Structure formats: structure tokens, C-alpha cells
Image (cartoon, rainbow, N blue to C red; front, top):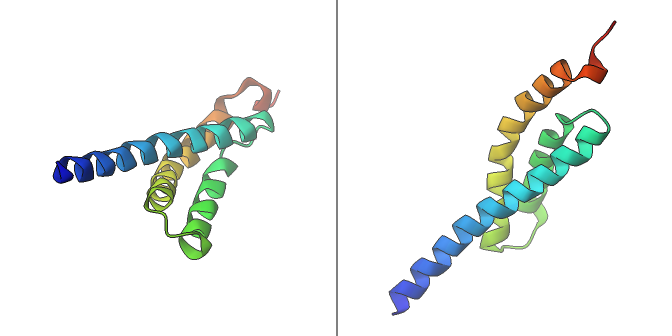
Length: 93
């Protein structure tokens, strides 16, 4: 029974970290999309992830979430640049 509890806790931290990081990056993406610079969200995600590792508490869920957020940031950067290139308000006449 103890082994099942340990496995469930580990699985909960992995899935919870993924969900939290996805929501975290989605929030930053949409916030910076309002000012038409969504690529900045990637830099902010990496900056916060580094700050958590350097100065944050030693919570395994928080550290796992910051790792996932930094991994998502590598996807956000090119997606943000593509969004700016294709957005109608950013096109020059």
C-alpha cells in the first residue's frame, strides 16, 4: 500500500507540474499577446524558472513546474515570432 501511495504521489507531481506549467505559460502568452509581443513570454518563463531554481523553496512540485515551464518556453519563442509575423495588425502597408 505504501508503494502505491508513493507512485500516486509521484504521478500527481508530474501531471500537476505539467498542468501548472501549461497554465503558467498560457497566462503569460495571452498577457503579452495583448501588447503584441508574445515572444517575450518565453523569456519571462525562463527567467522565472531560473529564479525558482536559484532562490525558491525546495518544493519538488515547484521545481518540476519550473523545469516544464522552461521547456515550454523553447516552444513559445518561435510561436511568438510566427504570431507577430502573421498577425494582421503587424503587417506593413
